[in-house]
Length: 65
Image 1 (cartoon, rainbow, N blue to C red):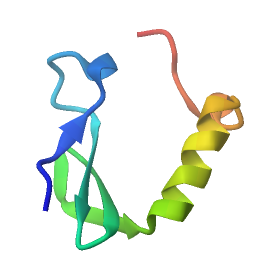
Image 2: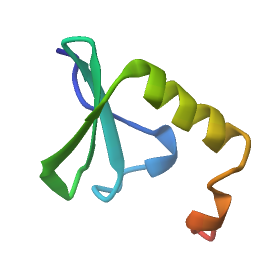
Image 3: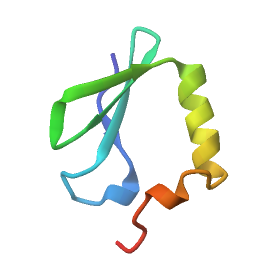
Image 4: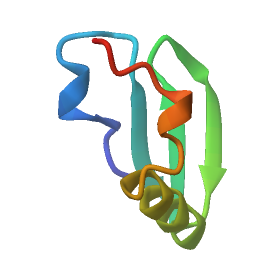
């Protein structure tokens, strides 16, 4: 099990998304709701990352920060 990791873009905020690996799976949580964890496979996570890199989810974000 790896430690929870957050994006460097989160700064010192405790309101961020964190990720770790556990037993071959990827786990994702919000730091302010640490008891809610989403678990997925590395392949599905990679697909989400590729979509994010291509801007497919930009309409969901607030980039004003």
